[in-house]
Image (tube, rainbow over the protein chains, first blue to last red):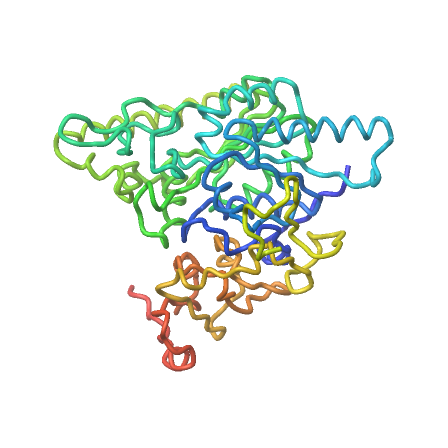
Length: 318
Length: 131
């Protein structure tokens, strides 16, 4: 086991040398690269990375450029996690046979995927990786929509969101089904660690990532990633939106250890009403019309119920 | 390599991030790395910008919020100090200005053609807090 990087404060963290390069083609103000940087800078070890098809993949590997200063692979939409799991299995096999050229180096195996490639298309592959117990980390950049292909709904899209395949108008208020609770689904595999993170709480995030890298076994991380293009807000407001999402408890930050021990890692001092979170985004604009106002009330009730459920689980340790 | 067309590539050809061997990338700062022409670090997205950030170090407290929240690795921090903005890779999103906690802000957005020295000379003064 190689030594964990010590990150006590932000000044110390800022001495890290980035392994993800600029001049990628992500939109200005995209939270994807903030999350990727925080994950990659959390360790000094070698990295074996993959990205499933999505914004992150198409924007960081545009011929003839690569934005990754580490081993990186992209295969298909669904199998980023299995590609990394295969590399990990090979590494383990060579290590057991004593055929590694530099056995003292401990690479970390991380796969990045969007919510489309994790919640929908790659679901079976990720579930397989979690079940087989590979020593990998799967990081979801959850922007609640297929942003790369033009804003189609995914099963991560929350109720009321207006997307190109679920547009809001005279007949419909947009997406009608609620978001899948992916962290709980993955925790149900009995994996050693699954967590929800947000880029604005960088310390919480780095702590979780380092914990995830230290444990032996599959790790699932769900990171909220506000999308300026599809959530329809100004690029400079990315961090404000992330703050709103964690402080309104729409994205509560918690971790589940060994599939049952739930800890809430961030309790906002001042809980913001969900209405403020919705009002900051263009995709929920129609909810503020009189006929759809009841949906905002339902949102608040749903978020409160989820928060109460998380608190009950934390208390009961089940 | 960078001038080879996509159809002139050999099957199985590998695009490398660096020229030569680097053993410890995580311990090598950007200025010490030998980037290959295929690394996007060698490219520029400066023409995406409509507004550019200008950094005034008079008020900076080196909190590094701009460093951690910059989506384009464009805030240059060395030895725990913020030393400037990498104008080749900055897309002008303005997140650094939003997260800057000082009063007045140490980073402000100006039109792309603004003159840096002239703007630094007339930097806004400290705002008195209303009580």
